[in-house]
Image (cartoon, rainbow, N blue to C red; front, side, top):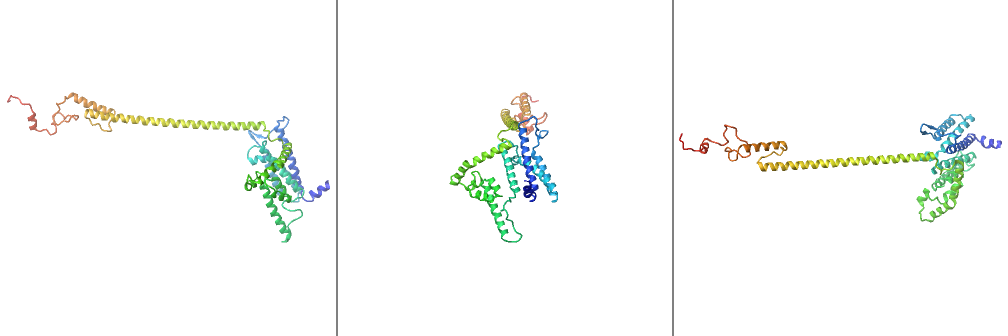
Length: 383
């Protein structure tokens, strides 16, 4: 076993990759054990890391470890194999912590224990499979033992052509919804050919673009999905739940958090409706007050116009259009008092009814001495 390890790992320079792989596996298993015990609310185990009311997810620690391991692997010289392995181990630990919450990063929401949280386990399985194939010495996008030569020989052309063909088949396979076939096919090109030729999955982009819902291809894809893929998916989910725990059982704290979020949203909706109702009531009250003021102003103007017309027709007083209210009443009162002091028929000549009397000792306008003697009363006394 030791000789095989030295021959396949140490001699080939894959010791840092082996350290990354082992650290990744151990960290993922310990992380899942930790979160499952926290979910089960074990009294003798740790609790979530919090800073006040803030829950610090382990993806934060994973990002820090990945940064430290990546920078360390770049800074360590090639001759220091031990330091390179240590940096790879740190990087593997951080990668496991980050991929364990891949669904949280993807959805930007805490979906760790929901159906969407299974994407994290899928990402971890993909990373384990790819790293394991690399550790076995299987190279992606090429055949084993085939490499480009320094010149311009036939091997270089064959390698370039095979690389382009494999990339095209990989893209087609992924577009057909066959994720695992496409990823593993990067290391085993024969799987890419099979995945690119066979029909696409019903919900894949290739199916939406090229398959008519009534076509035979689409019906065959649905039939294969129901007969073959559904049992494989159930088996994969069983393995995932055995390792990482069930994702369809929502923990009490997540239910409480969802209830609080729903309650806050309901309160915001109620407050928004109350504000809208209050603003609507204020607008209606202001409109009613404005209409009442307009009606009062119209009635007041009508009464003033009627009073001016009535006063001018009865007393012969021309009330200026701008004179109203108390001023008009005073003018009418003075005119009535003048008529009471001077009975009708005794006004001086030239005085127009409703006008002003001439001052004492002043002749009315147009009066002459001859007209005054003619109107003077005649007596029989010659003196």
